[in-house]
Image (cartoon, rainbow, N blue to C red):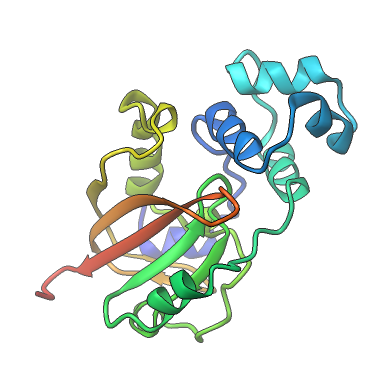
Length: 195
């Protein structure tokens, strides 16, 4: 996909391994399937089918499900401070929905955005083809079945969107947990040609 196409493409993409990521998030926040079903106004069997992969809802419904699980806030001030004040190019996202929780000044410069413009925004809509492909590989690698999976590193191409620019280079994903049990992903990156 060219940068121009990425900028004009309307993104409505579902999440790979939706059921496994939903199950991990639901359990981490301490909800039973029946409680989540009540919250979403569906039956418990529907939530079960989603989590087992027997049924996958539309991208719109997936976003609504993650939104219903609550706006995740970084209350772990030490972790947020480490990310925000890092000299590295870092950002922290809620793992299920890719909602941006914090990012460093170098990441803001790399994205060509302000220091707060993308907080609370799902970054999934801006994912390059390589990021979507790497996300799809996580299920085969057992990422969703492990409490602490090994870091995942891959390369991505540049993409330009109306709110963000993604630089070409290496990306590394690492799972961490907030103090309330919410799984988050620390994303570090190195632009091509930068040591």
